[in-house]
Image (cartoon, rainbow over all chains, first blue to last red; front, side, top):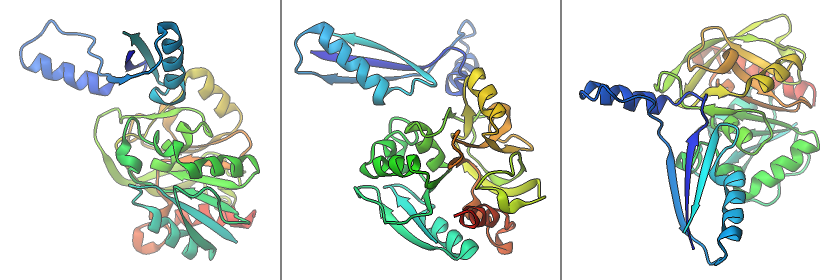
Length: 79
Length: 220
């Protein structure tokens, strides 16, 4: 199975990178942009064939390493 | 009196720490490579130095927190050995869960490198006893991700328990409640963004960092 993990700073945690990108987009004339958040995507393959088991496994990886849950939240997609 | 300085790939303040500890406290210092599975015997202090361990991959300190030697550092911390994480070392200590909170990118996005004035908030710790009546200190910061973050409940708790050890007089990076240095509840693990290893000699502009190292060995 293929796993895709998206990690973002939690709502309420200041995303200065997102703010800077938003300001740059405004500078280029896209005035209708707001709420930019910059995150990270991690993709990998798993030998597990059961989607539910794979998802549980990937969530454990997120809690242990891929995300720092003090400041970040994550989303897991299994396909 | 014996200390160990852990060297990760990408550490760049490891030798500074060794010299600072030797000159401030006269202690013997051994350098320990991150892949070691055992620490030297009878340590009074373990230092995680500044730098960019593992190129800051994934998150600052995240890879270093998984190094083999860190399992031993966690065990030593549980046994009561003093552990100090400076700058990147502070990030490693939060990533490995020995200290509360996390370090975010600086609020104004800039890498900040300059001497900063600090309040010694708690002088009743094994890291600050030698400051005596001195309630302020000057040390240099050098960080891009030194913006201390913890949720409000955690901040209230660590302030209430006296775990905030140093505070910035003029916050350089957006840290919550101006926190520059924080210790664990047991009082034997300290993380701080300012560098005591860059403040141990008048030629460096400050000797206040030497007081921190002396405190640790005075109580050892």
